[in-house]
Image (cartoon, rainbow, N blue to C red):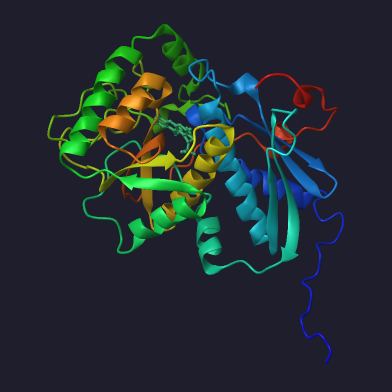
Length: 352
Ligand SMILES: Cc1cc2nc3c(=O)[nH]c(=O)nc-3n(C[C@H](O)[C@H](O)[C@H](O)COP(=O)(O)O)c2cc1C
């Protein structure tokens, strides 16, 4: 009997030339990144797209590159999703050459495979997904969304731990608040915030714009508030234009911590992929997140959060999720600015 299975057609050689690769890179580059540093570079190499980190954009408060790699992991998920939208299965080789630490992933097009409905929903949410720092609309998350987001995390090898309103939340809020009071005074952290915040009218295509943060973020939320203390992007300069979340109102519906089993480079890339996947799923239902990583930049505080909340993994990102009807996306550098055209000298070697 003849074999009736039909092999899926292989991608046409050269499919990544020109417009297709610009589309893939532009979609990947819409990912969230710490302080909107966009610490990534891409290189099209024949039938592969390589993702590199760009250590010139790493924060000085992130010496190990953890937040830089979470950000790059988020871009990697965007790249995978964009490949799916071209009708191919992405084949990802993570950290393919241990001697080249800046090379984070090599992505090629695998077998032809139509996009699923879930992929399509996430893809549609790419332009309007954004970090939400203002008040949320009242009410719970749409039915079934939270288990869906937890599934997203698991599918990427991470865990989304939900923090109950009660003792666990209060412990977390106390640690976040106490850490912020110290870190807000740290000259290194303040210098990075100044470097990566943008005044109104700035033409910069990176950094956090004035309309995305409030001028009074450093206010300690009321004790009964369900809102964690946010990073102070304003630093008393009066730049922020965002309407601040009320002291007791506009609270998020859910507080969660994204965890990984280990705490190395591959884990951080996994955390980033999980983060972008669940944020896009959420955004497809008009649910957005505030992100909090300031306390997690200090290793003993990360250990403290893990222990005090009895978390079953290494905390990578704290999130608060809620419904909102805004669609205020921030700027990104265009593909040409994040694509390596010339020799590999920058990307080849050196510490990251
Ligand atoms: C690893 C990581 C850490 C982040 N930490 C914070 C944070 O502590 N506070 C905050 O308000 N936003 C945080 N963000 C969100 C970024 O500021 C945001 O993604 C960036 O400004 C781009 O804006 P967008 O998400 O609206 O596209 C973080 C994002 C990532 C990926």
